[in-house]
Image 1 (tube, rainbow, N blue to C red):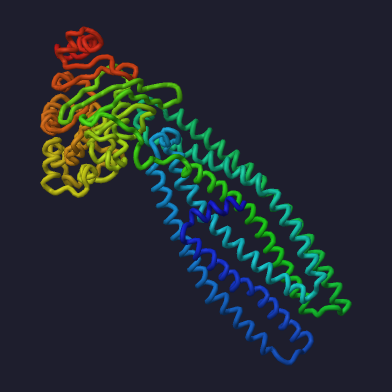
Image 2: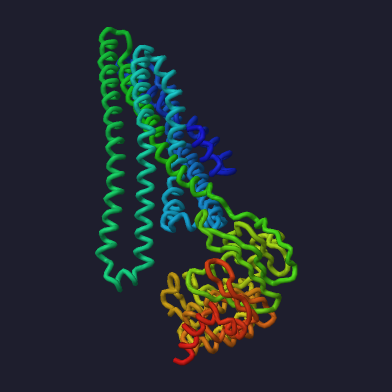
Length: 574
């Protein structure tokens, strides 16, 4: 449990130094209210029963009680809640910042729905965790104040209540680990539901097109049933715990009430003391009940802390990759490169690529050969398992990852469009771009052809993932991003694959103009692009099996020639 508290304190950051002192202060100021209220109640009863002559001290205590309840209590609660909200804000920013710095393998490992669930549901439980600690602190302090006061009334009655409540607390602790285990299962099932919902919503067009509605409803029902089952187990355990607690406290209250009545009848205590005893017994039982319950509930919040830490403990991207190289002349160079997504299953196998500064190279080959993986390695999304790589005549180890990616503009095959306007999506390539740079990129990528037809022009909202745009329009925005970035290295992963022939003709001209003077590496499926490459690499099973110009490779009459006559030549005839 101490280890869990340390994890929570670490997440709270600097605010832990203000949160816990103010919680202790709040407890010290609020806890005495019950003893003050009991004392006032005792004095009033004894005044009327035994005709006491003065209520002066009682009136002062009553005013103090009202002051604590109406003014000081709410004020302190405001400060506690304010600090909690600041902590939650910082935890959310911290968690998002950490996730943003994770390696691409992290995103390969975790489903996006699971990540979102942990960043939402499990982070929300952090607020509950702080609230539990706040409440627990209050009840512990209150119990420490009530017990000595109770002893001053009658130590025998106090002993009965304290012993019974310690038994109840012991019972609650016994339920702690089962509840933690069940809470973990509930969080996992909830994350699974989030995964199903994410896939269902993002793939809604496919769901409708292929009549998958029934399948996904069944999948959702299955996920809901699993969550309900784990939640039902939790409720059963919690109900048992509450039932045992209530039984112990009912027996304790009954024994104390009967014993106190006996003492009053035998004139060993006053009627006011009897009334105070009944009140204190109920209050103290409530405090011990809440202490036990909160220790148990902490296990539920700690399960969320564990899940969040499981996420945050994943490996982050290093500042730089320690990959040296002896080649200091190339724009892009990979020498004896090896890489695997899964251990002992090489996707890149002794890859050797060299693109001179300012030249264009094309990667060709059948699907699954490793072309797109090579682009990902150059983008530093993954490190080479072994081998050497240089970018702009410098080993990658001499760059930070941010510096390395600043050298490159990238257009993927499947362009990602953010929810926002056309202008915002283009400016992600260069947020401080001038108006002239923006207009130039839009003109060269032929954005004007569809953007200016919209009522809001470049301020047109494109929807989540660019749902309001066609595939070709999305690709043009991605190309505009690359143009506006104007980086020395250009990486194109079948960048014109989503364009119609006419649009591709115009954009191809723009890309060719953009590539002049830049080091360009293109994963190509269009003959026009491949023919103009300074060097072509045929990638098969993760390594280069042929390299040369278009004419040189045709003369070899091997892999490239086969691909050309099978795919490209047929398309040219058409």
